[in-house]
Image (cartoon, rainbow, N blue to C red):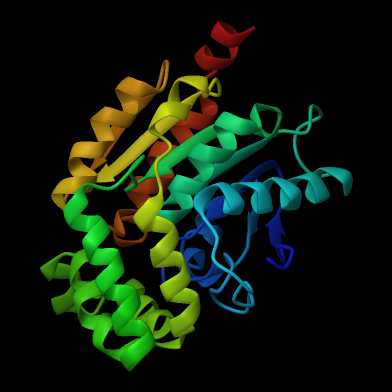
Length: 268
């Protein structure tokens, strides 16, 4: 069983839903939300992350997408979203996988889709990595996973200068429930939304740090090519947590995407 999403809503304007990556929480976005002026931003903790309870059983990305759809349906019932009940949905890594699945299955909920540093499925080496990391979390807790994760999320420059986003990510990682992390790793291991990508009809933007891990760098153009009409933007000098390492660049790219009326005209 997965408990319903608890939403954190701030601001006013066009509704934007932000989904965090593995081993994080809605606080991942705390440096981004103030920059999204003229937007009403909705964030939440994915199951087993932050203050969200660990689900009682195993789950997959499809289950998370259904959970998110139920949460957006509740927001829509409370009067949020566009007049047609759709939302801008942006997700990083695990959040991006969930967003892809949602966009394919519930197009009525998606105004525009933003996929940052994510994949449609993982290569075999990374599937093995998720199995290993789930085992480590269950046996030894989160502490052994913090430094390896931070090193893949941020560039050496950000680590050396002690960027605030690095400290926040480290704190959230340490406080992540080990079993919640392990369950999410198992969902990532089996995730594959490749066959669903052609069903995504919303205007889509793919974003990736140009220094991210090879699997994500390779996935970015593949996602652009698989989703009809999608566009791709690189964030220079950034790794897996590109959106918070280079927040001004991310917000600039996002704002330009949301201001573009061409996609709306092509869909009408």
